[in-house]
Amino acid sequence: MIYLDYAAATPVHKVVLDEMKRFYNIDFANSSSIHGAGERVKEAVERARVRVAKVLGCKALEVVFVPSGTMSINLALRGCTKRGDHIITSTIEHKAVLNTCKFLESEGRKVSLVGVNSKGLVKVKNIESLINGKTKLVSIMLVNNEIGTIQDCVKIGKMISKINKGRSERKRILFHVDACQAPNYLKVDVVKLGCDLLTLNGSKIYGPKGSGVLFVSQGVKIEPILFGGEQESGLVAGTQNVSAIVGFSKALEIAQKNCVKEGIRISKLRDYFIDELLKIKGTVLNGDSKKRVANNVNVSFVGLEAQQIVLYLSQYGIMTSAGSACTSNKIGISHVIEALGFGESRGFGAVRFTLGAKTSKKDLVECVKKIKVIVKSLRSAF
Image (tube, rainbow, N blue to C red; front, side, top):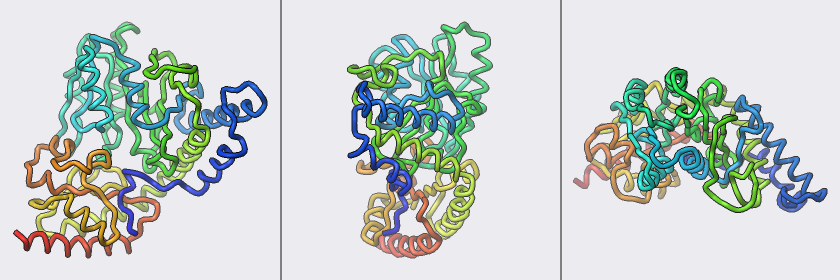
């Protein structure tokens, strides 16, 4: 199998899995229990919290463990806003953000969507122009999960900070960053980003599925959206998945330690792959060619259907996707590609290839060969 869908899910790193194992059948106690076995597990959770905090450049008490990136996003957007508040986000955010915003609109929040240019980039001045006296939250993803564009979140954070200097604490605008696709290739420093809230997901960083984090800056008031026990300072009810928490913390540590070196390796493969694909007639690149995460290649085979190409590639043992994994089973144009302003012919033909730890040049050479065969066959049918 040639796996080119790392933005959808990554395998669990062996070192991560080794750290997780003992919490299934050795230190398996409930971390909320006050007996010795429970205390040992609780200590493991707190060590994981410190490990994450060290990587993010924050305090341990600002790290909230959650069961997924989606849960992290929901907690951030729903927990920090109330009826009458104004939220700003972009047209190319993950569905976890956009669908949460739709729900919040039905509950009395006002949502403004900022558009992007044809390369998938948000202009900071366009965000600033939407801010008003009721703006409570700005949510922008650092790396787009479909086209790989990298937004200038540092600049956005500075803009919001400048506006906040003229506001009372009660009127302060919060900045949320969805960084799920970033840690393998970019440093994730909450101080540098200037964010109040940040979302991460274990399944994108060679950690376990069902794990994630919400960074909540000290002093930010946030309400729970799920009720039960008092786990995670009362914000995430339910028995803690300790193995996932420990696994996530180790995976994040490894990802950030290796991100610069791995980014250089992968970006060279990415550039080679893009160059070869663009030699195929009727193929165009989606997203900015420079402000792009190291592992993302999103191209449109104009006039063809992406799902057909993905299914044919799968028959050859090459795994990729049409759009994001969350929406790839739906026939239609990805909302991200549509937001770039292109027509249906380009939108329907968009295929996402995402490289990762096991990707080699040999894999990409083979993939290009098979794509040429598939595209030629599909075009000859018309």
